[in-house]
Length: 138
Image 1: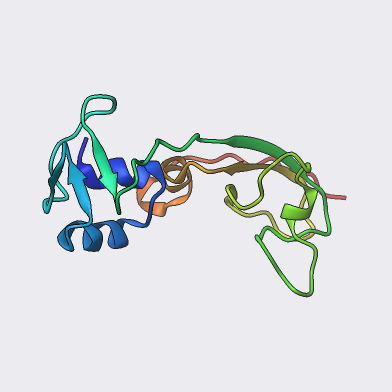
Image 2: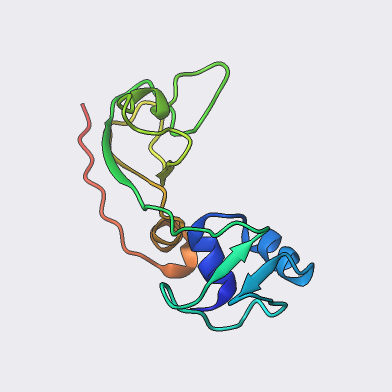
């Protein structure tokens, strides 16, 4: 896997910030400063540091929440109730985000995750993921 992708999966920074850090010489690979973000690395084989710290692969989290009417699909809003308020207290709200959206008056299942790749695959129009919605009207 590419060094840049490895560091993204560890959650140390965004891709853009990682590329900049590599060019600035803030990343080492097996004890040597590495300036190429495309260098191939392997989990458990290569020794990598970012600003002197050994990054660890972040644990990916997945939660399914039944969204009730009256809440908006957003992480925060000063004036309206958000789906984040519906998450159980044991969920670290700073580490997950909703995938997709349901309108304020809509009820249904919502996926929360820390997996950016899954979120991108499921929601980006270029991926053309087929979705089926079942609607019940009064």
